[in-house]
Length: 273
Image 1: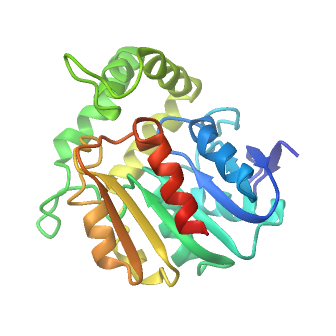
Image 2: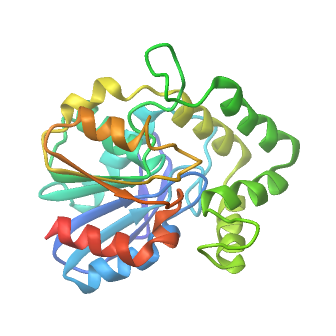
Image 3: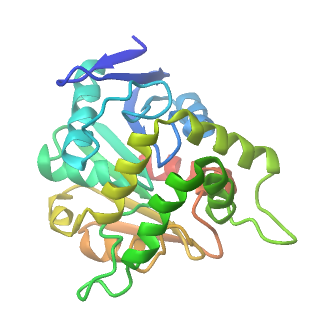
């Protein structure tokens, strides 16, 4: 069953590996579920059933014109859980934008069936800088994302992934091939979904959702994350979620699934066990 049809008729591509207690991995923007492959293999080898899917508009999923707000995206998650039968004793783990679906599922769907959660380099609780969120990202910086994509999307993402993976002038924690691979995943997405999701993750306030986390929650974040800075994200999320555990990756950038892949996998396994 590689595709799930959501309540509004959108086809969502799903990967379902292994057997055992289910773990659902939700990918970041502007990637696809393939970004989770090393962690999927490790978790499946360790005795978990691991499910990952391409967000609507990205990867191999269909690209409807609408439905890129977090309520709709979270309903897609609920439909994937129902279609795969992973509605009980499930762990939800979201990377970057994917953390928003985890948070909104906990509130909008009352965390149905979830026994633990993970937020990895997540946008939760609120990216936008406001008077009551002074550590957030200024509106003009978020606007630059949309402007850059509209002007020259391929060139924008070539530059974007350098900060994403912490590439410097002399050193890089990942190979140039990894950056090229991420660029290709990004270019699989539609222009409309790419822009609409950037608007959603940059402007959705998840602070009201934090109280809905009533399960053990692992928060992992790099201290040198330039894409989603830790103060307004990982540290704020851990402070607002009861029964949460914050693990800071000193000096690490945003793309932990690649730059700190082995450590991330081990931390996930330790937490899930």
